[in-house]
Image (cartoon, rainbow, N blue to C red; front, side, top):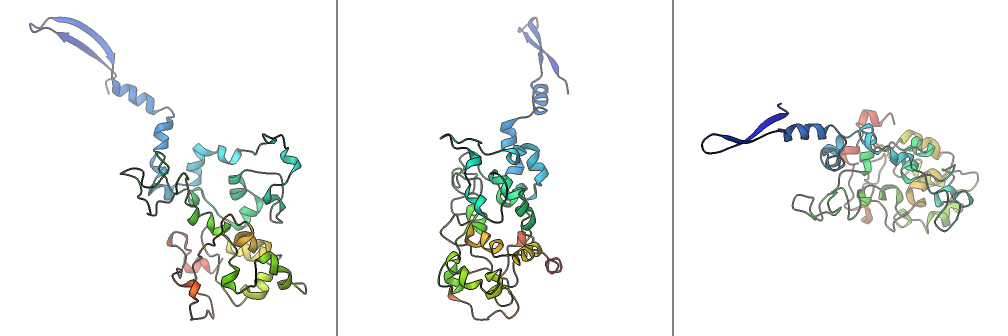
Length: 283
């Protein structure tokens, strides 16, 4: 590529009246692309479908490493020291240590590493950096579509957060009340986990957690020591007043009669999270 060229202005008779050597704009462009460019990176294909589903954590963290290194304020704007108060998650038996950031707790905390296998693109599946709203442009996802993000959010909470932060659905279980009200009656005579002992050890939904973003075997192992492992993701950390409609993967001796509340539920996990049968049996 020629990086410099001669610019000349001539008269009709052929006499040169002005000449200058200028740098080619193509050479300038080539030089600029070698440097970090925020606007170009913002529109990189890895931030959009379908490339985002193939992006690895290493690729994401090559630019976003700070997301795991951020720390909560040691002192709030009102003057309250973080060390002197407990965040809501610090009162749970499944969490130990100082206050940490949202992403650290979901990806790097000891409990998260044991029971989950979350990747960046489990939650972040592409969005529209222009308006951060579906249907905001002719080329963006339409409103009401499976856009993978919601208004002013870079994720879709109903398909991500709600899975582990929904309401405890005691009504469909036939329980008289929420878990914190009935737990004492279900964990008697040394029973450490009323979830397993009363229902889920041998009777209901015994085929569970066999998806790529969870460690099914580790969950079952930890659940033997107490129901907080189960309740934590099934009502104990509820951000929403609704429950996630979990797929009803068939289990041994499953009742053939479909309950009214289960009509319309999928009968197997989403394809992108599904584990092949042979691998699932090992979980």
